[in-house]
Amino acid sequence: MTANAALKARRDRTIGPYSPLFYDEPLQFVRGSGVWLEEANGERYLDGYNNVPHVGHANGRVVAALAEQAATLNIHTRYLNERVVDYSERLLSTFAPRLDRILFGNSGSEANELALRIARQLTGSTGVIVSDYSYHGTTITLAELTTGLRTREPLGPHVRTLRIPDLDRDQRPEAEVLAETLAELDAAIASLLDEGYGVSASLFDPLFSTEGMPRVPEGLVAGIVERVRRAGGLVIADEVQSGFGRTGGWMWGHDFAGMTPDLVTMGKPMGNGHPMSAVVTSEAILDEFGSRNEFFNTFAGNPVSAAVGEAVLLEMEAEGLMDRAKRLGAEARAEFDRLAATHDFVRAAKGTGLFLGLDFAVDGVPAPELAKRVVEGMKARNVLISRIGRDESVLKVRPPLAFGEAELPILLGALTDSLSDI
Ligand code: PMP
Image (cartoon, rainbow, N blue to C red; front, side):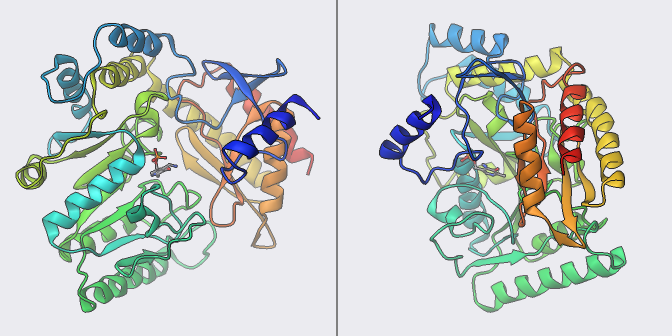
């Protein structure tokens, strides 16, 4: 038995076999630096997948800020702390002026749970609209609206789902696809109103990441926002994957999508691996919620988290990571487009910035087995990527934003070779 197989057996006997692992033969990383990871056997892997270590694995600025603040003071939020306020101001300055208040959490799930709670209270309604293939977190509320992962909880009676179209798959005229989707949304809203749930919120990832980054019709996002607001609901943008410059050139996925939500939730890259999350909203919404709820979260927004979050923003700025994501992302996307055009089993290239994919299909039928072979082929070439989408037929290439000029040819070379194997 290999060392990794032995560890996997011990893991199965403790954590259990249900918590998913990547790859037929899972990897065990023991060290990380920048965009490189070292496996227990000493081999180096290029990280083309992980968005949590946003500014790089074991980033020096982040580690120093964490250590320094942890060695000075860490305390909950019922005392004044300048660092927490400094960080809040810095983060809020990246939003449109209307989004000028922040509530902290410790995970993306907590942020989404809180955003839904705020929406429920403000609207007096419980109805929620989500995409029909999405993931937003682990709580009961979120499990009841999870459509993109196996859960035992049935969809809540107050939940309606919307199919997000992909123009790379649907060959009909764009206007027809748009009209059909918005009509489905109108029907979903009407049914929530008819059954007395009302509409409290829509909850979407502006990039539709889990859905497989569909190429949506122009006007879809605006149409959703307009209809949800008209029905009295609030618009929540789940930026756990799409935020912090991921799209290249835009700090927030909702800016990329051209809309201003009422509530923005974020997590994953926010703390570069330190567990932290937030809900950003407007003064009016926070006042309404805050005046009726004494909201307190022991660990959320503590000085160590603030120091870490601040270091992430400073590192992004110092290294020009958003611009780099835009530049390298455009370069990579051009190559992905070329690969799509030259391989008949690749239907389309997907994504923007440093979040890219290739959609595999044979005779118009999704081909998840080919996507899986490429993911394993990349692993054999020491590059980490994964798959997304309802059919798991879309490659998920979403490296740390610290991904550099030197690494791009390595990733693209491995991808070209892995496609050639098929
Ligand atoms: N929203 C989205 C879009 C996510 O991708 C995830 C995590 N995969 C979550 C929410 C939940 O975040 P967490 O695991 O930090 O609770």
